[in-house]
Length: 374
Image (cartoon, rainbow, N blue to C red; front, side):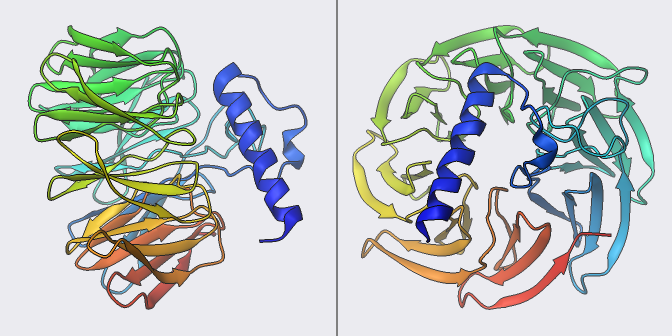
């Protein structure tokens, strides 16, 4: 990587961090071409791939032949370019990954709306129906017949998954950019107020909260009775899922954005410091450390016993904790910030150039690529 490009990356991360911490808009950001218009990941369901494009559309793609089944554009009456940037007025940035439940696909826009789309690409409902909330960055989650979405207004909303009617809301002390995790009758959500909350999924009643020293934008991982969550204070925390008590914490060299993954009693957590840490789930002892040389913002996936992870600069790796080695699968030469997805041994990657890649998780062969641009 050239020195000029390295400095550019550092400046971009600093701008993103400033916005994260302060909530400021960016003056003149029409000219900031490096600021992405969303980084939606992919969800795979019923032989189709669903993701948000950087043109502000929910796109459905046939998994077998890559035919574009349909797309649904979203429009807004306010600035929706992302992080306060004023892009084309009809474009809605989509940062969160869609979720599929039953015959509906749920997707949230930076315009402050949550949409439910049916299997033929027709809108079933939107929330709120007559207005717009503050920007939504995280993705929706579905559990117990409800769809949940966090918002920059600091509130978590629980809606009837079939109708979009609001059932309850819970207010934190600051913005919510995180996607929640649901486990049994409990949902877990992080906030810019530096806390992780455990709420009753049915009525929003708070069960417990855990304070950290930094904002939380990562999605929690619930594994074997423990909640694992990274914070901007550079710690990865392991909390008792029942009462929120601290089991252990691990200090990295920079903050955590990506959701960790677990396999065989080991937690794999990627950090903005460019490393993936393999930690024993029971006590946080470090098993291995993999230096990817570039920030890890994209959440990794587990494929056939291998941890597949992407660096921001576009390198895709398979990690082996047995010999503590990393194997480079492919260099896409495009920045990767969206979370990875996997199905049937194939890893799906949405790049910053709005291209969807399908890569064989074993060989690293790029099976196909598809531009999402109209």
